[in-house]
Each structure stands twice: as C-alpha cells, then as structure tokens.
Length: 406
Image (cartoon, rainbow, N blue to C red; front, side, top):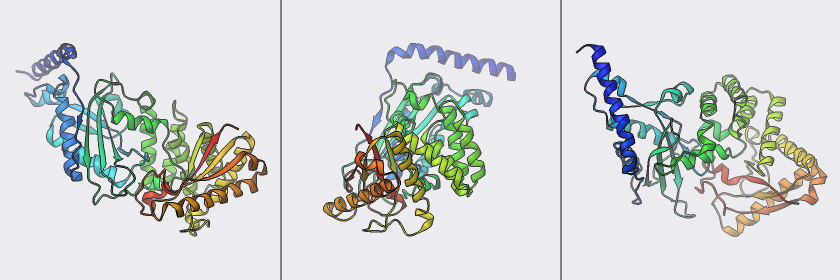
C-alpha cells in the first residue's frame, strides 16, 4: 500500500473512532479514581498516573490501534502540561516539579501514543488535551501530614475534564522549597485563576474545567514562560514577558503584577518597582485581601535583619498606607506565625507584630488609625504548616490586610 493509502486508512480509522464517541456518550462517563491508602510518594504518583491513563481507554482518540509508523504519527495524542502546583499556596516547588516529572515519565512509558508537550501557546493550540496536577496537604494541623495528589486531563476543544485521579502520598524526603519566583514574591500569589487551576485538577470527568482558569490559558502560557525566565535569572527577558502578559486579554492577574515588581527589583529599577508594588496593593484592596510576607527576627517585632530580605519593607508599608488612606478603607491587620512554639505564645506574638505593622501604617497615614484594627491569629490559619521556619513556610509568617465594611 502507498503512503497516501496508509494516510487515508489511518484517517478513516480515526473517523470511525470519532463516530464511536457519539455512540459511547450514552454509555457513561469515566469515573474518577480515588485512592485513600497512604503510599510512598513515587508509588502514589504511579498509581494516580496509571489510573488517569486507564480512564483514557474509554476515549476514542486513545483507543485507535496503531498499525504503521504513518498511522502512529497521525494518531499521536498531544498532551500539554501546565506546570503543577501546591494547592494550598499556589506555588511551584521542588516537590511539584518532582511530581510532574514522574507523571510525565510514567505516562509516556505506559502509553506510547501520548506525547507530553511544554506549556506554550503553540502547543495549547495544537494539543488535544491539557494535563494539570496538584499536591494538597491533608489530615488536620499536624506537621507530618500526607499529601493528596490530584491529576486531571481536560479536552482542549470541549473544555471538559475527561479523566481525573487522586492518590494519597507520604510526605517523606520531599523538598517543598518554592522555586525562585515564588520564594522572592512579597505576596501570596494565589488568586482566582490559580484557584481555578486547583479546582480543575480535582474536577470529576464529564464536568467543565473551571472557566476562570480555562479561558485564560493563552495568557497563562506567557506568564509561565516569564516565570521560567525569572527562575533562570533572565530578569530583563522576564520583565518583557510579564509586560506582554499584562497587555493581553485576561492578563491583569496577581502573578503578572507580582512578576513585574520582582523583575524590576532584580534589575535595580526601584521607582518602577514601587509603582508595580502599588499596583499589587490596588489589586489586593480590590479583592478585599492582600497577604504580604513580612518576616521578623525570631520571637520579636524587629524586621528580619538581612536587608536583602527586609530592604523593601518600608516601601511596601508606604504604598499600603497611602492607598489605604486614599481609598478610605477600613481594614483588619492580621498577624500570623509559623507552627512552632505554644499556641498562647504565638497568639501573643502575632498580635504584637500586627500591632507593630499597624502603627507603621498610621505613622505614614494617621487617618487610618480609627479605621484599622490589629488581630493576632497565631498559627491557626497556616497555609503550609511545616514549622520549618525557613523559605518553605514563609507564607505562614505573613501579615494579611483584610478590607472590611466600615
């Protein structure tokens, strides 16, 4: 048979599978796979990945038998991978990188017709499916908590999740240090788009992916590319890409504003950085909450001694005070601590730190005094909860500016 004949045969085969899809639509949607038995991390990842791939066996595009190399090329199923995240913080960490690397290797080993593509606009345009995944800490307030792995495949044409699997993993030997962009970020960069990614990764098959996330995939590829440039130390390139993302439809995201600030800081453009941080504050006030990573020396209300960490704090406070005064908002200034020490000590310390921050705001904008209140939350609302007191749980030692009704 000629090459053209092979191509026609392959196309007919794929067309038959497309017809079968309609027939199978009434036969039920693949059911999500959930494992509640705690397993070693690598074993849990393999189990979740295998369960995800097993569900695809009911999808016509995955069922096509590959008879020749020509047919294999036509029948190849492209899957684009949006980098996986920690569900609680929205951060990419060394552990989430380990998750996506193992998932990718396992999927390609178990199903030869799958090709996992980087998260770029051209790949999103041509791929059939989108792969997302998260790590979620479960099991209450103990520091030695297991991790739930959630994986999902979304049809890029229909916008519906076609397969979803979960497994429970032991948190042993994993490095949860955030990647440089997230480690350097002054704020918690977990907005509605990131929340939508997390929800999509846990969505049952047959249901639509979160629209806030899914509709912003084109700009998300640019933001992801900018983040990679920042992590690699290419700050001018990162700034250019973040600015490009900001100009796109749906680009007004916290990750974009934060990236513009961070890139300017790295490039020594302090005036531009202050303007960028002001935009972050305005975004947070509009959303009625801004979580800022003010780090203090242990057990004190003195800012972290290293100026590389705390050097920008005066500018942050100046922007928060000015915008709070100009908008005439009422706010709660909520202090948080990491999960070390007694509850009573941390409650007192978090209140002292919140009161210190509030006094600094009032020093810059006296009118805020009657409209703001300091609150100590201790470690009761930890995001990470590791108690490591390092870059891993820096978000637990944050100060939250919550806009409330006057």
